[in-house]
Image 1 (tube, rainbow, N blue to C red):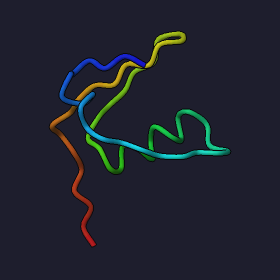
Image 2: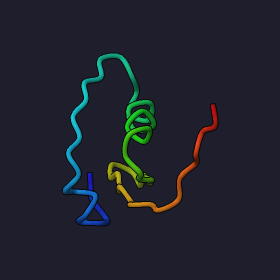
Image 3: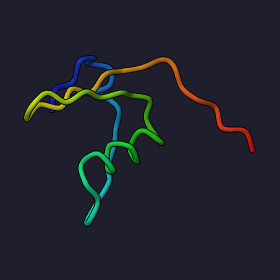
Length: 57
């Protein structure tokens, strides 16, 4: 995993996944931290994003 933004690397994040795929885990993490990601072969790059979707209740 490569962090494209050092600020993102500093954000605390802890999670445990047992049966989820990597993509499912990353999508779940995106619910708590604003980031995008891209994959290239065996490399996952985490990208900081300022854009987010606000969910209305």
